[in-house]
Length: 91
Image (cartoon, rainbow, N blue to C red; front, side, top):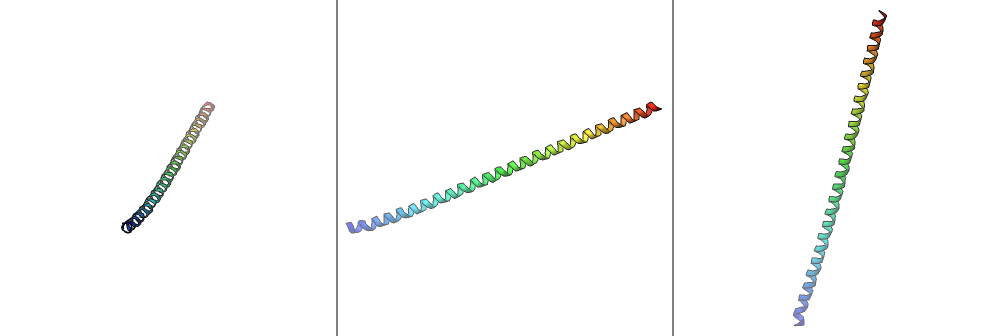
């Protein structure tokens, strides 16, 4: 009886060892997948933040340029009106 149960025990131990190695491989694979997913998410978040910052900077620059152009146009119009009124006043 013991002779026949011994190979069974060895086989069971071998199966358990193989199952343990397979489980370790699955856990390692899951860890790698989780790390890759986290890295991809971090990269996507960084890219989105950079794009948002660039868009905000571009909008601010455009607004500043528009304000400067409007101020310059208003100053030029005021100067032209003042000069024309002075010339008409001299005549």
